[in-house]
Image (tube, rainbow, N blue to C red):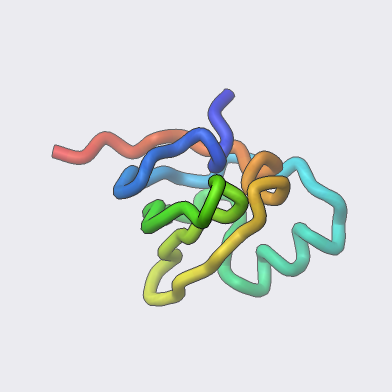
Amino acid sequence: MKTLDQLQVNQTAVVTAIHAPEDLKQRLFSFGVRRGTSFKVKAFGLANSTVEIEVGATMLALRNEEAKCIEVSLVCEL
């Protein structure tokens, strides 16, 4: 199992599961992050405390603790 916080910049992945409290799941859902969503890692904050991802046309910053709750599967890019 790989989680969002373990990815590298410019890697693309798909959300396979979200293991988080209901309020966090609802917040992620409102930003378009749900099972099956594809996204790209754009940057990491200072000391890797945050991760910035691109979901469609939206840029979203997540705390490292939140990123650890999101299980992902890497997308092979040719």
